[in-house]
Image (cartoon, rainbow over all chains, first blue to last red; front, side):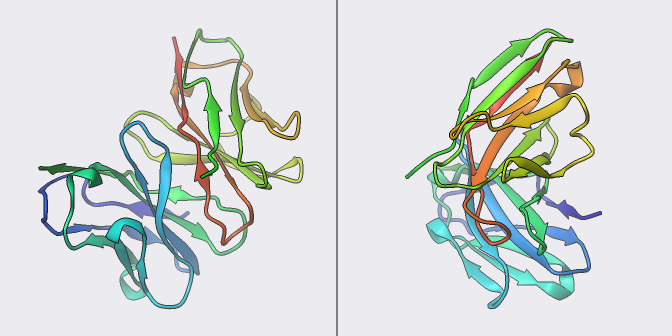
Length: 114
Length: 114
């Protein structure tokens, strides 16, 4: 069965620090990869997604992620975080076969201090 | 931007009671989903629904659960006889396509079974 691992459960950064959140998945076939964000009190929102093509994908709010197939990884990065990036971040994967049965990681809670 | 809306935001019920969680997906969307997140655990897929029938369901989605699209706008999740372990945040999501269309999530309904 597919699984997604997020290595950091809690991350605390100061504003302007760089961010990298790790995500690894276990599945040998073709997958679609996603990062979702949940701001306090709000719904899950799609940050970015990878289906095919350029393994470096850019999302909203200055986030990007790199798909490294050999490492089964899809790490999320942002060069300079802001206080407003405080949120919970979820990595997710689906098989490239149809309906979006997302398999989520446990999430990483990011706190950015001003 | 159109949103997926869920009601109520919080529901408390006694063990053994039936609950219905309601969702209004985005109006032109055709694919509907329920996910849940038990406190401290991963967001888990429950069921997907398309063309008025269940397209896929997880092991969690046993006979106690059912989904319905009773009219053109609502999408409901019914739990017939709630158990303590059904306490979770339940998220509705919708999309306008299959594999490559992002899911739009609602804010969730927190279900507490006492």
